Image 1 (spheres, rainbow, N blue to C red):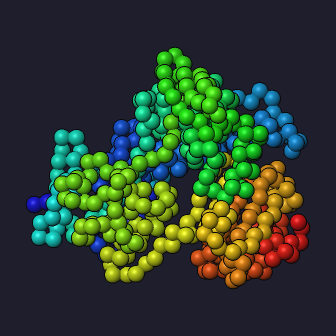
Image 2: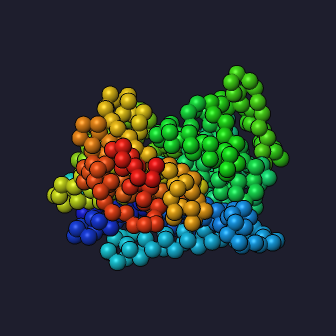
Length: 475
């Protein structure tokens, strides 16, 4: 007889493993199925995020920032170092250690919360007596488990670029970019999104000549364009990335060198590099899920169709994270996972998609929450704005990172905060002030009247809020 559970989650990424833990906490017998295999050839929980995405990329970003600071920034602090060397293999080993610690931690949490961890590819096979039958295939080993509720959390996979195969030797995806054993002399990146900018920044700081080719004519089109323009200037001038916008990629030939033909402003160009990162986005991962066999509805782009509560067209089948509509963000997936587990338990949780933060971990960092100024204009919403820079902020000057801007947008009539946009030091942490404020429907005046510690980076948010009411004190 097959194992029976109340809830089976397919996928152990940030959405899936959190959903499984929350379901178990609510008293459901729960299993989580995952097929990811780590660099050591063993099962590794955590999905793309922990294994080959968010976590390892931040480790490499920090390592490369440290090396860059040693070479370029420490002198003004009175610290001089001669003969500094960079060891790419050791940087990668440190990153791997962090990944191992965190992925192993999920296994510990599963045991603590009595979640059954099943390794293999999970696929829906049908429903018998209100019990969903889920096949778990691990090589030649196949077993079937049953569950009253199924949560699909299969995530996303790399969007392929037609005409070039990713081998993670010469042509790399995010996984290959995270595992280079030495710094390439010339690195090409196709795609100026989060992955392209972060990985380009890592390898530029440790000595690579980095050129990014982006099809869109606008840099960071999803971000507020005042912040995006400042980011473009900083990343090209200070970081030294070469970013070409509005390009049309042509033929790519891979030999000892990689040659990328492209067109920009009607002119034919060629980029020759030693390694090429392809980061043109991600697509929902439904391969092998058995969607067709059970009638699980997918949209034209391959996403699992869900309602506002993450319920699919099938009874007791739910879907969360990258495989459904909405931003492909780990924290969005986690919150959806918690919400679904609680809905199964009869609770009425809510996830506000309008108050989900976005972060790009370049240096300086870029972060935002809520509407951009362009969106407010397009929607005909009357607004007011205030902005302030880090240039006169005592904490930022002490850190040696006094670049960047904070911009707050609020309703012209009610003063309710509609968006907070920033580029600068540690804004990945600062943006949460905006998230909390917006979740509680705060006004810009509320932020202006909250006492902020001095000296702190958060004072720039305070100043921007004051500026929204035309009463900035330091601007």
